Image (cartoon, rainbow, N blue to C red; front, side):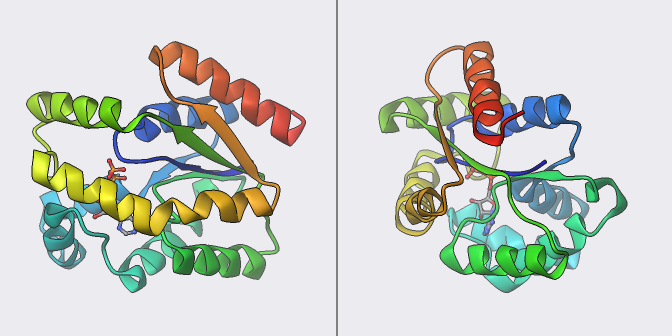
Length: 191
Ligand code: ADP
């Protein structure tokens, strides 16, 4: 199974990605997590990414694309994968299309979690008090929402046009949302 999961910052992508990965026995590849790991290890990639992340901006496509290309070429992703947080721009979609075509593969579904804007900002501010992520200040949260609207929201229509979109209401208890996500993926992929 090859899946992507999208949704505005705070929609619960990372949480649901972990459950999806477990159920379909595929690795969850989170570009945000990979960037954060690089930042905390102080790698050159981390140093490059950090200034964008701290400002709520997207890391440049060239950096992100080659990182994903390398990651999905790894052994554990051979049988499938779930991309969490990639693609996030129209240019990244084209790049992913190329990666998949090179390997003779196709996406099975593009899951999008839909959530009300006010709920999201509240969740992120709450998370800031718990996890202390550097990009969870109110100003940066607002900027991340804007960037999502401008650059990533258009991908919803793009994948809908390809008949791959699986829209799931992300509001409610985590468990409820997970059950909705599983049912929607199973329905869309005929599992
Ligand atoms: P969220 O979805 O809550 O914004 P993520 O953990 O997915 O958080 O991403 C955190 C940050 O990492 C983003 O704001 C961005 O700077 C960077 N990032 C993650 N994925 C990508 C991507 N595909 N392209 C560009 N930047 C990315």
